[in-house]
Length: 444
Image (cartoon, rainbow, N blue to C red; front, side, top):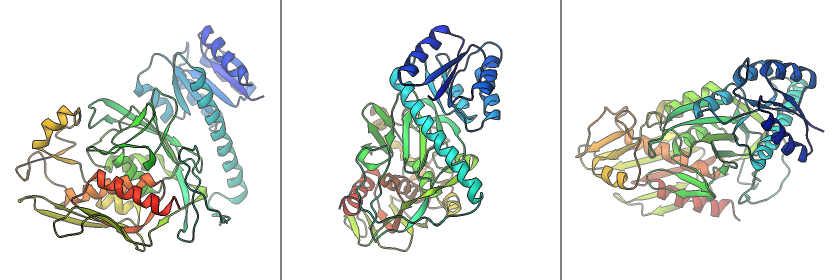
């Protein structure tokens, strides 16, 4: 029987949590303080720990640190009914596997615990393999031929394998991390908490107070109105494109992202997200991911001198050329980007900010959008002029559209080899051609 240690000074929590766990076949142990919990942890060596943040003596965060100093791979699930989001994400940043709010429910407890125990096994196996192979040794993996479509709603991604793909390593992050900010459209102060996932799990968005997750895939697209948002049942993740672009450029394929419905906007670009990911570190995994290799031209719209269109065609790498056409003095802005490294993305694209027009503000307000727009996170344009800031690049608007495209196209769940050319398009056209690529290459 797997052993679970419950560290909580409330007797009713101990009893109710033990009842849930023992019904699921676990053996439970109790501690009423941090000091007692650390001592029992040393003696019992449980597979997982439920740890209250508010404890007599040393608090839950200090207890968390001491337990992880003993066993860095330990799965610790923080529990509390009296903390704000900043405390919860701080616990995750310091090494907690997850956070649950009281009152606890059977579904939430069992879901998070099973996922945590699965992740612990993956970490232990990785540690064992590293000890055998050596930390820096790269092993060549042979993948048997098979052909399966991507499952509509699966906890794991089954990749279609054809002669049109070559393979790259899947990647995740080395450690959890948190990012604070404000939602651009909701105007709500929020946070973003990330943690590693094992190979094949994909990129997932979770809500801070709801169980379950939304796979970051085009099948779950909800809206493209001024941002890209995904939804699954009552779960939603809004304004995800800038963070998704960062993950795309960094080559991260497996990640859990917990938010309060909307991704923080930062300074309106992806530059702060790049720094955020660099703080966590990136870790290659012993699994491969197929790249979609474009072997025919696909187009949405009409490719004319002043037309609105987006197309993708065969190429040796992934690249995007975007042309924005506005009245003078903004005029025509065009930029072409080849995504051959994370550093190139940081240097050329990541710092390009989102923008909008003065005449759209009242419309956005009526729609309940742009409530978090500020002078320091939004390029505001009126009468063909930027009125609140200086552009970071002469063609910053075109570069930002490339940023959006890179983020939106990662809803395919894998890298792409092909050249994208777009003019006067936005999230809606991106979604249309992404679905066309999916139908052409992933549903045959």
